[in-house]
Length: 157
Image 1 (tube, rainbow, N blue to C red):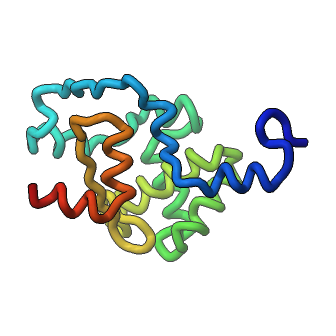
Image 2 (cartoon, rainbow, N blue to C red):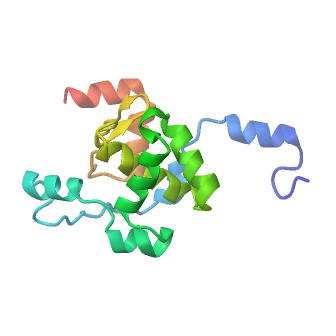
């Protein structure tokens, strides 16, 4: 079961519990790369336009054999406005032999179209995230992340 330097479970546990940086093996001699972004990345108009687009009717028809309006009519006929998200997706999945992904896509688009759900809304509210590009090695970033004292000191330098 154990090969190489892990001859038994005790050696494996000792190895895993040592203070060690998992990023250091990967990050030796790694230099960060600059990320190139399109010029309209922060353009609110471009982002707004992209956010309001949905999958085209032709793409939906090619994968589901129906257009958006046909799906909306089917769901209206079964009273989907009164059903939960889970029930709508399950109905589509079971009755139309679509993949779980397409069942969810049709359900979410229907809910947005009927104003039962807004864009980016999740069942438990909304989700927000942020990211930051760091101009340092993975090793250094991990050390700052893992060490509270180092991270706090770096904030005020």
